[in-house]
Length: 545
Image (cartoon, rainbow, N blue to C red):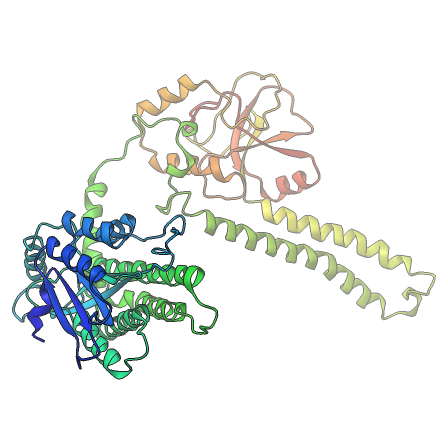
């Protein structure tokens, strides 16, 4: 049979006892197909072909009406083939005459490989093939997806839909592109000829035969993509996404067939083929994900791109005019000093906090165990201080205060670098300048400032922001300080205050300074009490407090 004989819009493959190969009956129109189906039903049983399968490429309205009227094919099945969608009927239709009780269906998607002529770009070849397919006819079948896997090869994902009923088996295929016969139809023709000639007494399972050919097509696809490295990540993603979708649809079709139509005597599961191909696809994707960094841009090009894109920002002056208050800025939009958003750095910050807490626990454990071991080793040199001796109390009298002192030193060392607002006498000397310290001339009423991050009027804040200043670094540090709190010496504006147990008489002013060893020890002994907040009259980038 000539290759061009397989390019007709509709034809039938037939085999009789007197034939040694498949014969082909061509239908040039839907009326001829209708007449043939009706004639097969009225013809006597003697000369009727023992094997018969209808193959359709073009699904115009006339052909669709013929299939639904005479062969009782579900309209949803045809629509699914045209729209390249999955077919899953809501109910299994059953008729009294049993015409549809034996109906079986299967939908497969498979890749078809084509060779692109040398010297012709793949995009141009793709456009020509698509244009040729659109000019073929007036049917409504959707165009199959087409992807270029190399400079010389193109893959097209086709669809084969099989409907089996008592009167005939119908195979719906995508129309050929160009004048080249698809390899799938050629393989199907040869396989049917061999099967029908090999054992005339046994019926051929068309569904199993079609599935074997589809699996063969997928094996060739994986061999082709394994020998080609894609230059575009976008093309690779689109191709493998389509392959994943097609294999999953084939697996769903196999599961549906087993659930509805599988006989109890069959032990082979058709799902195994698709599960194996899906696992093979996942291995390809995993390998490509590891090879992806190899095809990235060179460091020099990245450096040039970064410098070019950042140069306009470096030349643009930074100003605080028009910046909204910090409370009005969503937390996910704030930035930190290292240029990363607060949302992206949450994981790193949490890990750093956990490491810090772990080191603190180790430090405190050492502060408890070290004095005990030292005192016990010293007192063990004399017998009167043993556990059973009358002077054993000396061990506890010496060890417990040393443990207390060690823990106090460890705690004081952890907070001594913290910057806080502290009240000092107005006539006291300070090394800080007016930009970093603020004062008041009279006593302010005592208030519980815990939880008050900005105890000032919003209008003052907006005015201060609108004036613009030269201390951009202070602004960044203050915004970070509001989110991080106490415990870092990199913040320009502290967010913690010291409330003294014993207050100084006379006028006072608030001054920013580090706790130091003395302040840290007083904090541990509760002489100083740390509270979150700022001085009552403090203003952002404060000049007075």
